[in-house]
Image (cartoon, protein in one colour):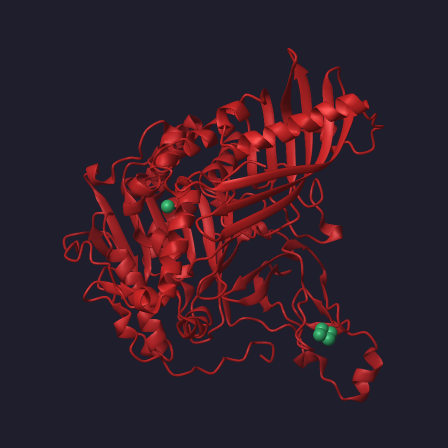
Length: 448
Length: 183
Ligand code: FES
Ligand SMILES: [Fe+2]
C-alpha cells in the first residue's frame, strides 16, 4: 500500500463561520466567496475529502487511455488499466515532484518524467530510471516509489469519481438517492452515455461555489438572466417556471437536483426540433426502463450539482466541473454528453447545441459569467463581505407526503437546495473527519 | 470539410498586389463593423453556406495527435456555425435584455500577416492571417485573444463574401470567461 497517498494532517476549523453561513436563518455572507483562509480550508476539508468527478468512462475505453484533470488544485492522471479498472494517480513525480504527464488526454504505455527520467508503467509502478545503476548502489527500493494513487476510485453509470480520503464513505453512500435522479440523464437508454470528444476550458474570476450553487438549485435566475439568450434561440422568453404545476427541489449530502416534469423545456433552448423529437421518441422506452416519473425529466427544465463542484444540465447535455483556482478564480471544464445509442446526427446536434448555449461562446453562459464574477468581486470590500445575503426562499416547502427519494421540497423556484449545499459546505469546514460530519438528511433512501 | 483549408501541400498562387490590397481592406472593414457593433452589416458579409469554425484546442502529445493535430472536426468547438447560428448569436447581442452587454463591451479587432492566394475556383481566395481581439468591459476588465485564421472568400455579384473561416487560438484553456464577440 506504499503507493497510496498519505492522508494529510487536518488543521483546526476556522472560528465564527456561522457569521458568514447561517442557514437556519437563511443567510450567508460574501466573505465565503473571497476569503483566502476559507479557501485554504476548502482545499483541505472539501477537496481532499469528498468524491470528485474525474472522467467519463467513455473518454478512456482502452488500456493505457488517459485524461489528466485536477482534484481541487491537485493534478491527477486518470488511466484505464489492463484489467478494465481505472486508476487515478497524482500527476507529480515522487522524485522531485515534477509533473509527469503534460497532455490532457491520449494513449500510452507509461509516463517518463522529463527531469531525471524516472519511468512509470500504466499501473503507476516505477519501472526504470536514467542511470539506474547509481540507484542500486543507494539501496533504492523501486517498489516504494511509484506514482501515488488516490485512496478510492469508483463510478456510477459511466461517471468516474475519486477521493483522496480513505475514510470517505463509498461513492454509493456519498451519492445516496441522488443516483435515482442521475439516471434520468445518464441511464435513460440501453448502453448509457458517452462524452463527445474534447473538453473546453475557460477561466472565470469568480468563486467556485457561486457557480456550483447556480446549478444546485437556482432556476430562479434563468427567466431573468437568460432572457436575451432565450429570445435569440427561441424567439421568445424561456418557459415560465412558476407556471409549472409540479416541480421539485431534491437534495442529499449537499447535492441537489431541481427539476420540472415538462420533458423538453431544457432541450428546447437549443432550438433544434430534431432533439425535442428524439426525446419524445425515446420517452416510452425511458418510462419502461425508469418509470413514468423520470421519463418526464430527460430534457425538462432542470439542473444538478453533485457536491462539491460537478454539475450538468439534462437537455442541454452540458457537463462541467468548476475547478477551484483560488478564492476568486475558477477554471471551468466542460464536456458534452450524449446517449451512446443515439443516431449520429442527433449526437452531432447536441455537440453543436450544447456549445451554442452553454460554453464560453454560448449565448446563455455569457450572461452567467458576469453575474458570478461580480457576486465574487463585490466581496473584496471588507464591509460588503460581511453583508447578509438572503437565501431563504422556500423555507417551509418540505414535501412530507412524497414517495420520491431524497430530501424533497416542493417547487423548483426554491433556495432549499442552495441552503442544503451551503450547509454541507459549513459542516465539512467544521468537521475534522467524515465521522464528525452531521447527517442532515431526512428523506427516503430509495424510491417507493 | 474544409478540404481547401486543410490541404497544405497544394501549390499556392499569390494574387496580384492590387487584389491583395482589396482583400486586406475588406478584412479591416469587416473588423471595423464588429468594433462598431454593426452586426447586420457584418452578417451581410457572410456567404449563405458559411462554415464559421473555431475548434477547441487540445493539448496532446505528438504521438497522440487528432484528425488535424490539436483539433478535430467532431470534437467540441467554440464556434461550429452556419449562417443560422451566426444570426442567432447576433440576435442575442441585439436584445435589450442582454444585461451583460450594457454597458457595452468595447472592442478592438486587428488583422495582420495577411497572405492571399487564388482559390480552387474562379473568384475564390484563400486567405491566411493573424488576428488579435482586445475587449474591455466595465471599468477595468480586459481580455486579449490571439489567433491564426484561414478564410475562404468568394466574389459574388461584385461583392466579397466569407465562405469558410477557421480560427485557431494557441490556448488550450481560454484565459477569459467568454467570447462575446466574433473573431
Ligand atoms: S523529478 Fe521526476 S525524475 Fe526527478
Ligand atoms: Fe444560467
